[in-house]
Length: 241
Image (tube, rainbow, N blue to C red; front, side, top):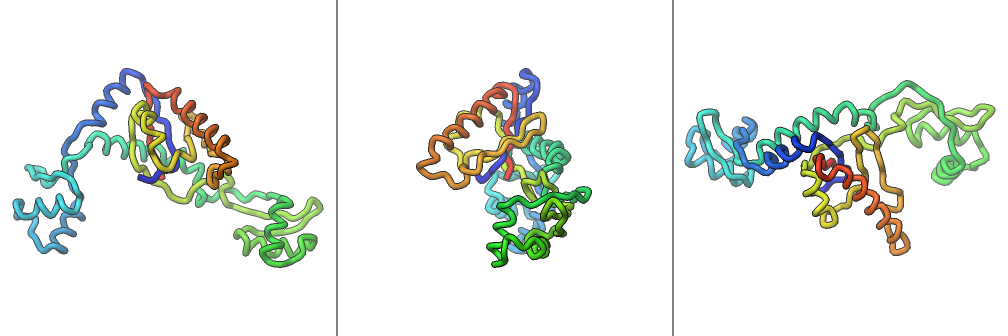
């Protein structure tokens, strides 16, 4: 499994016990008709022939399958899958705030010295030539460049709070269970999304950790465990990629 963000979904403690139990239970999950049609077309086996069709369905889905009066089904964590769908809907609005692709009202920002140096180096022009730098901003990041009395600026409608351009839920795990295996999961969480919709990122060293950064890396791990530990007995950890 690959994930990068852990979202904390808290709930009343008594409800958490019930949810945890239900998330571990198997149930019937209906099969999308597209999957059935694909199997019928590719393997040339009729959906009406249950005895022959079921082995093919189990081969493709790697799940125990069956058929009842409602049609074909898989034996899977039905409650968990339904909960994941609800978590996805619940996250659409707060996550939209952090979507790179979300356009915002045009705003003006000024380039830092590092930004100017990077552009100058990339295009092999003088960092002192403000007009030349401004002229390259559009090619550099798509924004409109210019120069005024304060320096080199850009006009943008890109979301400055953006962290991603797409996302999907990989799993949902009771927080106490997640914390018991967090050190074994790869990668270690790079972001925690808190119940009050705060996006807490790992420091930059996390992405290129070397021996000299081992202490700082361990500090981030400890911080994540402490944050998640506050919700150990009343929350679900939703894992996002």
